[in-house]
Amino acid sequence: MSRLSFENKLVVVTGAASGLGRELAKRMAVAEKAHLVVADCRADRLETLKAEIEAVCSSKVHVVSVDLGSGDGAKTLFEKATALGNVYALINNAGLSFFGKTLDRPFSAYRELIQVNCLTVLETTTAFLGYFLEKGEGAILNVTSLGGLVTLPYQNFYAATKHAVQTFSEGLSSEYRNRGVVICTFAPGGIATEMITKSGLDKHFGENNRVLMHPERAAELAVRGFKKKKLINVPGILSKLVIITQRIIPRKTVIRETDRIYAPKKR
Ligand SMILES: NC(=O)c1ccc[n+]([C@@H]2O[C@H](COP(=O)([O-])OP(=O)(O)OC[C@H]3O[C@@H](n4cnc5c(N)ncnc54)[C@H](OP(=O)(O)O)[C@@H]3O)[C@@H](O)[C@H]2O)c1
Image 1 (cartoon, rainbow, N blue to C red):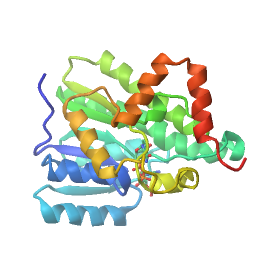
Image 2: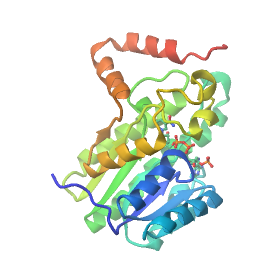
Image 3: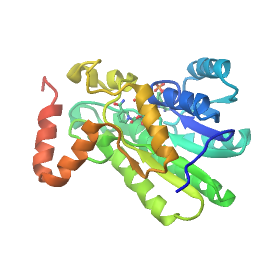
């Protein structure tokens, strides 16, 4: 099976201002020689990234400042990105999480998370899929999570959004197979990014927990899997073991054990 090549092609990366998205953008430009549209809500950080990338390689980086937590974020991103050139690939990476008991926050506090992690991703994927199908080529990588493949107490809304994107992506890849468009997912376990602190997970597991993967390594594995057109790319031995374990051990037991590991220390 032929591999994807991003050389001299235009790739859109969302959530590129920090963490995994930042590393994905750097990897796509420096190692894969792609041109980029980097999207996030923090334009100052994107400008710094653009300068950093353009200083070390010949890739062109376009900055798109967009709030993907707003109802029209997907539409804005699609219009701005496609106006910048012939987009070949989309990486839906932006996301956020919350760690704690589900009712610790009112439902309204989860709206942004649901919008960014799920609704915007589904809408962006749909818009770009139509665009790619018309051209007869294109590739989509949706960054989900191990939490999109297993039950994750104390990150319930996060896991629910990731499950939705995971199953949606898998379904699309089947519906639109053999049409020149590749749909992939990347489902990592913990990565040492700002999300760990912003979600409150650092208080439970420690900011520099050794099980957390370095974002640079995660990006390398994500791009490697994307190039190989992997539908479900779960990086790291530990995360792969989790997937195997839940196939062997009864689901109820797996959920109980996950709860034991994740239960916030002070309840
Ligand atoms: N870190 C992990 O352990 C882990 C594990 C599995 C999967 N993932 C997934 O990996 C992806 C990247 O996360 P990360 O760990 O790299 O976290 P991160 O460092 O917090 O990066 C997420 C990026 O998304 C951006 N974003 C959030 N809300 C946005 C909005 N409304 N509009 C535009 N951009 C927005 C953030 O910008 P602001 O900071 O300005 O909000 C940030 O730049 C996410 O999809 C996440 O679910 C992470």
